[in-house]
Length: 120
Image (cartoon, rainbow, N blue to C red; front, side, top):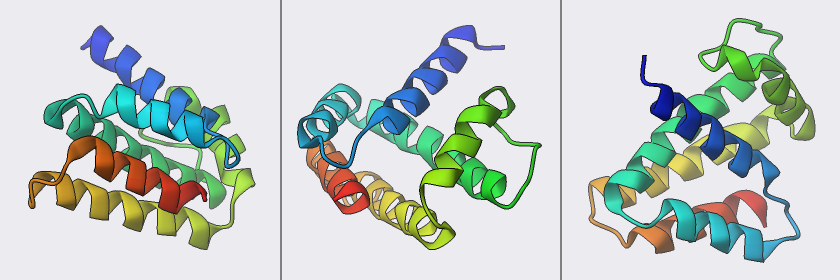
């Protein structure tokens, strides 16, 4: 078991869920922290992709999640938005991941764009 990896996963998820729609500075800070390098950004997006799927599952009433230790946070996140909004977040995340991985896009810029589309 990779304890550091689990801690990093929790840190990413909690930081993401702490973002506020009215705090653009927070979005930019998130992009700065997790967009420092291509590998870090891809890892962050992988974590968020699984997380958002957990949120959708929690919204549907599932109690067995990939991030089972964060079930209560998933339920809280699921209550904030309707399913189409969460699914839209997944689509935007996939677009950012593709731009970074397949098209060699500017990492931080892609994270910023993703967050603006998700939260604005």
